Amino acid sequence: MADFKTNLRAELDYLDLTVKELSVKTGIAKGTLDCYLGARASMPPADIAAKIAGALGVTVEYLVQGGEAKRQEKVSGYYIKSINQLLTELGEKDVETILALSKVLKAQGEKK
Image (cartoon, rainbow, N blue to C red):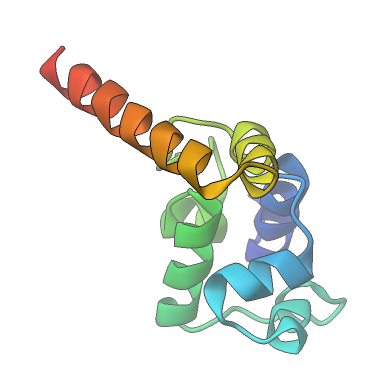
């Protein structure tokens, strides 16, 4: 059975996410996150584990117990990161258009 440290590292690698990026996404200090990944790794409190799991798109149970990753998202981290990068390169009007299109696609998916 894998531990929190191993599962957290695996998810960061899978999503191609740095500890610093996770820190920004969660509001948890980088040094605190480093403590969960270091040689003397500790288990975070439940509220912190929930923030980390939410930011990674997995369940807390997966981070703690391991096993098959139970993703909360349908889109892999690679695509999300790629889309975010592209959005930063577009103008505000184009981003608004993409947001509107995304909402239409979501609504169509919910009707199926």
